[in-house]
Length: 400
Image (cartoon, rainbow, N blue to C red):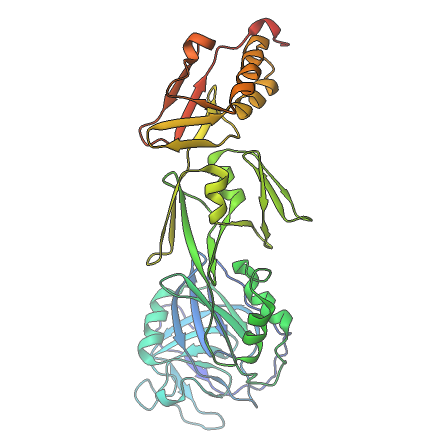
């Protein structure tokens, strides 16, 4: 297309055959993904699907080529030269290209159509047809050099506005490949579901062509008013929480034993569910690990966690905090462990705590006088999510 001109010539006949290996789709930052079995176009912006449109694709004898391409031209009111004819058709109701053309490889392009009934079918000479209003909208959203990936994914995972994930399989429109269990796992992998959903549900996906099969709900998790970067998942009746991400927000150390599927956190060992991307624990264990309060909103699929964190000399430490009405208690064992790890430990403090443990495993922060015993103090934030113990350290034993 010459610079400054809006019209261009497009020929809907292809004198060569392109051969590409089958490719699976991948999320991309800013791109167009054309998936032939589902006969859809998805527009990605910043790794998210912002638009999805139905399309028509090439018929079996002139299939739409697979591969990675890019937008090479954008034309308004394209002219059509019928194959083998000496005349041309100007833009208008008789032009099968419609009123927009987005070229992505040679004579292949995405365009409108004067046969809207064909959308959803494999009928073209290899180009991609769209409803006129759809292609005009897409035309304004794409730029030259934007990636165009034409894929052949027979199973796709979609996310609803309510963050519900479901899978759908599609027919082998060109007879390219049978659907296999590995295709199912590959489609589930970006959502960390390939190792989490049951084999029976995978089999249901494999055999359920054109059915929408619910998989899970993605959960936004807030810990002490901070949203964690990883999503939780609600699968059947289980709410799974990515425990490493929670520990990182709280700045609490965590150890994962993948072989035994256990997580050690806050001086406790609990069962873990090992995903391919994250390690999860069931929501019910959060109360056991941390105490605190947890509110799950079914409408928004949001889990809000208020988790009290114990700080020792301005450093978060492993230790559970116990609340009983206005009474706040901590484990004397947890505090003793922290003192013993300190390079500036005070033997008198340790001896006093050891004696205290013989009487009780808990320290009531409301009644225990830290200033009298250790010349220290206790601070509790108004929302009770930060409990801080500050003790003067014995600098005589420092090994600087």
